[in-house]
Image (tube, rainbow, N blue to C red):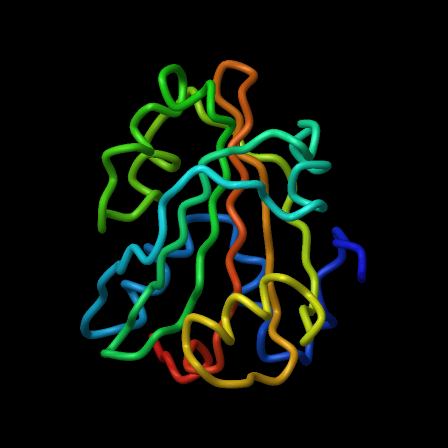
Length: 175
């Protein structure tokens, strides 16, 4: 399996502006579309992918809250977002995650001055990666390799990982 990297794709790559955006991806999509909505497709306790638990410093045998949503712009799915928080943090620092429903996580992350963000990491996920397989399962079709980015948000020393898988329709959005 490929390794997540801190280097984004080179400048001529059309995905680079989306991948390297440091602010709220949700807010950027909203500013580039006529309509926007969040669709929660899963929120449950389960074992995260191996590389995810390593990145947030937890042993792989423990379950965590995994929340998955689709970001839709102009009626098209543009991002599959996948968030992970330790089970114990659902009654502590990340308790707001439990009641988000179809509201964007960005509201909780980018408006809270106590939340900091670690550097972004990037990966082109292909048919062997669990995130690509999940996109195929959710949308019922194959994709070319998809760009994904992730970062860890920290509040009071407790991590929350957010991974965003960029779907082809995202490149159709114009400011």
